[in-house]
Image (tube, rainbow, N blue to C red; front, side, top):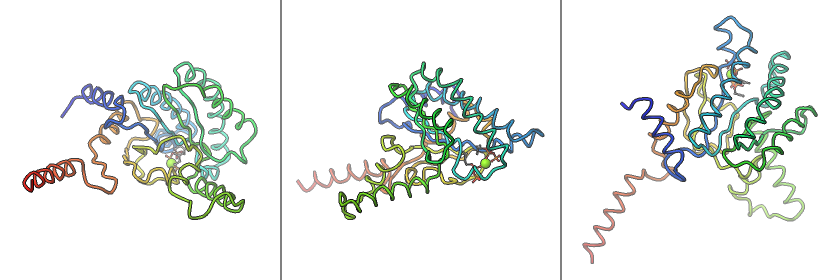
Length: 271
Ligand code: IPE
Ligand code: IPE
Ligand code: MG
């Protein structure tokens, strides 16, 4: 078994390799804030407050290992059904995060993107989102994607509406619809699919997160609640990803390499 330091070094090396075995894009379902708080006899909002600290830590770790894209699921389209005070608390946290953290992220070269439905958002929240995106749009150290008021089914339905309108306008034929076109019609067409989706908090479901984009993502479920998730947990999830064999419906690289070897042996014999 390798030590934590070895594991971290290996993760750093792999993530910095362009197209290497490390993930370029990690997406996280940050779950377990409420249960973390309840266990301590605290209000759920205390778990969310602590969760923001962890966001700061994990963003720093992602920068440290040279990750290209980090997506964080911060508020789902279904989370509006929570008690009014909790929703208010979460919106307030978003506001405080935008006010206090965007400058720091800006100075570290982080580009911020927000995915989710914006149509019915409060004007002040919308302004914060647009401001964060505008201020950081020239950065290239890492892209931090915040999924806010996000639901994958809404996202796919919106893409279908856009495509449907093009058909009605006569600029697109139904036969021209391809998976690639659907991908390009989603909220962030320029962000590659996540290689790895991590969910903290012990539940093993996607909860309407990146359903289209995660078709071939590796899934890692961590039992740790988000407020307790730290750099070591993050590195362990990435190390787990690196042990996986991504086949994309094909055969593993080792099998493919040995098949290629056999083919060349047979070809040599025939010659
Ligand atoms: C995740 O933690 C944060 C948000 C959904 C905003 P939860 O609030 O869902 O925590 P649990 O799952 O109830 O413990
Ligand atoms: C998913 O967690 C949403 C976020 C982490 C923002 P939920 O706590 O809302 O998901 P369910 O209700 O357990 O499926
Ligand atoms: Mg939850």
